[in-house]
Image (cartoon, rainbow, N blue to C red; front, side, top):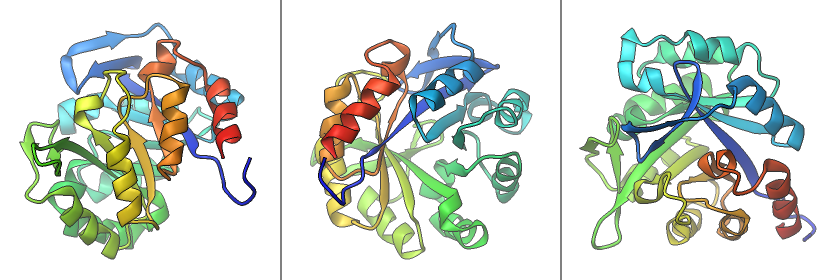
Length: 254
């Protein structure tokens, strides 16, 4: 291990739908796989392995908006012993405040951060940059430019990723979670060039990389990009590796 360099954080992900642990393929509710693992027990397994944070997404809130049954999410937040960052369906300040009050350590904001960056910057000022994560899902165009997608990836944002991140970082953004949509749930490897580019442009940003992790080797390569953390869900659920193995490898790579 290199002295002075901290290991990239492994952030296991649980996607919650109707109280069950699921995974969508590239955000498609028609391609939803349900896992037998109980979310609470799975989260505790990750904590016992040494993971510091859990990424918990409420897919019901994402899909159903104000009519969603968020009971399973808040019930889980009240029980978990691991630190949690939670997203899915966060549309206004009340949603942020409610999740923080329920025990979330950070709230993940997707579409609003990309479609109304000025509003999101106001939230950064109100709640503090340590408590918010901008989740930016991007599709890479033919020229290699990443463009954020919003509202379940059904619409494009008005600006490219670089213009958006310029605005958000100037507004105080500290944590960003960036997903290459083309890699999400595919287990085909992460977009290393994208994350290396982000870290190079915004060295003070705590970048969380998401999408495409298929094995421990992918995590080690992600750590080399300078990303602060890596979100992985499906690879853990499919048994490609376990959290303890991944954490050991990241410590060795640091």
